[in-house]
Length: 117
Image 1 (cartoon, rainbow, N blue to C red):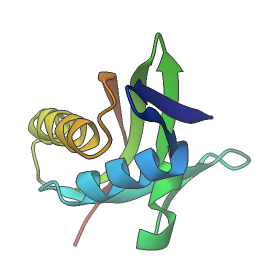
Image 2 (cartoon, one colour):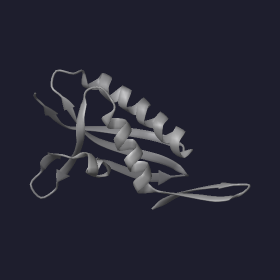
Image 3 (cartoon, one colour):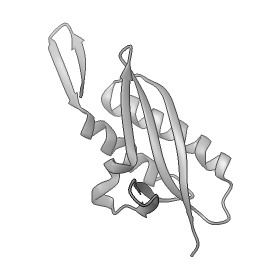
Image 4 (cartoon, rainbow, N blue to C red):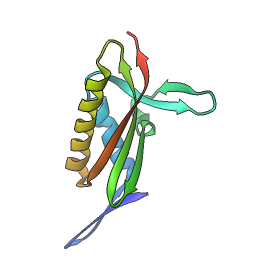
C-alpha cells in the first residue's frame, strides 16, 4: 500500500516502508524506548529488533486518507510507561507529518516487553 498526495504540479507517491521507517526511527529516539518489537506468532515470543528491522515493529493502515500507526515497542525497566507512550505518540506523529506531509489520525502503542539492564 502506498500513500498518494495530489497537488497542482502532479502526484507524490510515498511507499509505506518509508513511513514505517520514519516512525521506527522517531520511536527509537524517544526516551525509555529500547527497541521495536516483533512478535513471533507461532510461539507468542517477543523479539527485540535490530536497527535494520525497525519497520517490522510498525503497522500502518490508511482510512479516509489518514494514517493509523501501530507501534510495538520494548521499554526500559523502571520507566513510566504512560509517559513514554504519550511522548512517543506526539513525537512520531510530528515526525511523520513533518517529513511526509501525510495526516496521522491515530497512533496506538503496544508495549510488548520490558528490558532490564
